[in-house]
Image (tube, rainbow, N blue to C red):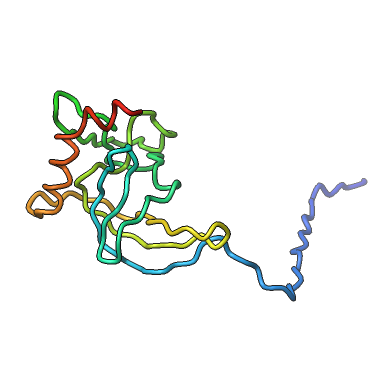
Length: 154
């Protein structure tokens, strides 16, 4: 009596890469690591971080709220700044009108330089609120006082 074997063998070949002879140029390099700063907004509506090394614009990747649990509305509601804590499923794509930071928040991150265009940015790693820091209070007060002039230009 004939017998059949239905056994399937899977053979995978792991590709071995070649070592490059050339040095790969990275787009960004760290200038300062683990720097604490405070989020400010300028009169033209751009967000900057003020820290001990100066004032730096925020890296464009840091404006995304995907995967961020605590988000802030871009605009004040009834003259106040609110924060929204998202529950379980906060992996939604970007929500228009919200940011992962707000003027007056403390941030920790790296100051990076883009080697192609030679500009420095602040790349945010962590955001929190410090309601007792005078610099945070001043940044938040500036935002509330000049809110109409800032968003009238936009």
